[in-house]
Length: 157
Image (cartoon, rainbow, N blue to C red):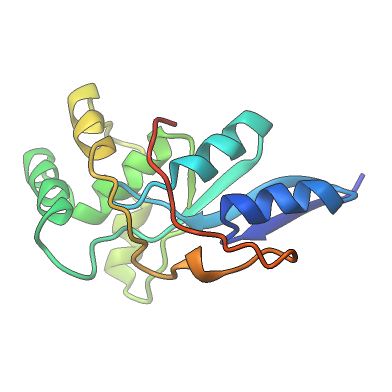
């Protein structure tokens, strides 16, 4: 049978898709990392068995706040902040697609499977979720019924 994937759909768009799609949604690609965790979308995907592909690491804009927490964990583990952010996603069953044109960073981003984040580190990273996306804010999108997609909501996933 046929299957589809989408990217950057906020919850109202996913719910609207469910009303008209004639084929099964199996994969959704959107921004997700320790500093941006759209729990409503993550929960929706988990409950329906939709594979999540996450992009971004939330580390490029500034070093303060959540970035400092990620950097601190990285220092403790002798890893890069990017490796820590990506490993968090892997341990949350999120497929990651890091991008770089720098060979050293490409190798670094691939080296995620010879270490693990402990429960305490995962909990600290889980607690970082910030309300604003770093790459593309989909909250201004509207459904076909012109309903405002709105912001992202917290909660566990």
